[in-house]
Image 1 (cartoon, rainbow, N blue to C red):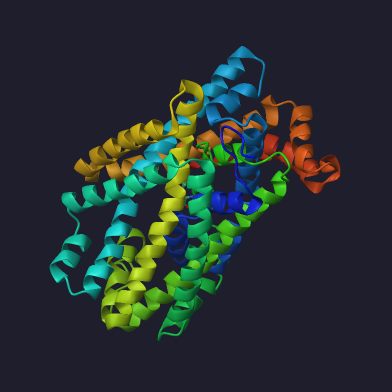
Image 2 (tube, helix red, strand yellow; image 1 turned 180 degrees about the horizontal axis):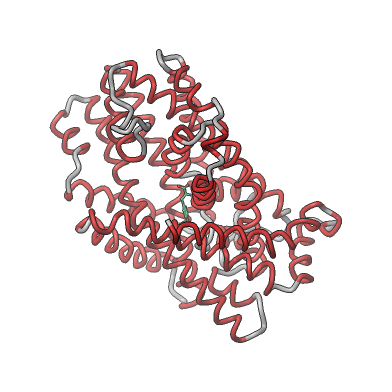
Length: 450
Ligand code: PFF
């Protein structure tokens, strides 16, 4: 039976939901181009190393604290210590996480809205509505607002349905669909002329570039964003896991799925760029670097799709559909964090809570859209470059220093009776205590300096 506050009904459901949160625009959009311009396979290795050595331990801190408390981030961090000051600092950290999650969602919904608009543009193209396609693919306040609102409405709709009927049901439907469309797109693009050249750029290692100090920091930030860390989303998903589950195993699987999809996305995006180059589309900037981020997704790839005729329309539809799904399974996790908080700490019903917080976030998105030049990049930088690492640092302190080791072990024993003899227990507690906070402080110092 599901608990009154909601619980994932199966291990599969949790993995789909948590992997859904992790796999998002960051994987398909950010990772491949970063890898391509920063040492290819060498960057990949650095990223893999950091994901397992830093992001996974922090993910585990969130999951374990969440499952132990079976509560939202604020309640859970308050519960970790009996000391009144530490309880207050814990609650404040939780609240800050929820605010950061809401701001991440406010820019994420704008970008996801563009994906949705491009997805629809492929459909209007298919039926010959050229004027509509043009409106959908041109940057305008009207289009941006309309699709941000539509995307937020989808997110609110899913969260209103609750943990099993909303988050679990939709993640379990959408994630397999995402994987299938990604694999099909990769197979198709690899058959096109120029694809192998892109594959070479992606896979040839250049260690000198990948090991440059600034880059390691970048890869670290990417790993943090990619695993949705620091803002309480993984904590709240952890709080919905049943006590019978083996947490280190589940966390490991989620990390693995996240990394595999990022790597797989590289097999799509890089070859696609070089296919575009073969059809005469410019893929390098004036300084000779590969075009990345928004120009890549909204200029280079659509030009490539255009040059492919009718097949291009179908491929474009599949690609932007894939991006929309990836964004939606992430956005629901961001909204769930503050919604669970208002339900549990302020006694609101789920539906009005989801609607109210959705509206507030849509208002922040609107403010960003109205001051796009000034706010868009700023909100991204403050939340992901500073907010997430700093909050991740606090989670490590609470899991490593504040929380009593015996309680921690008891929590791990719930899903694995011999937890104290396992490798995880031998390494993780001191790792999250010493190594993780030091590395995060380094990233933070570096991003402040640059
Ligand atoms: N992990 C998501 C991505 O890679 O796109 C982004 C994200 C989701 C960040 C949820 C933060 C969050 F709370």
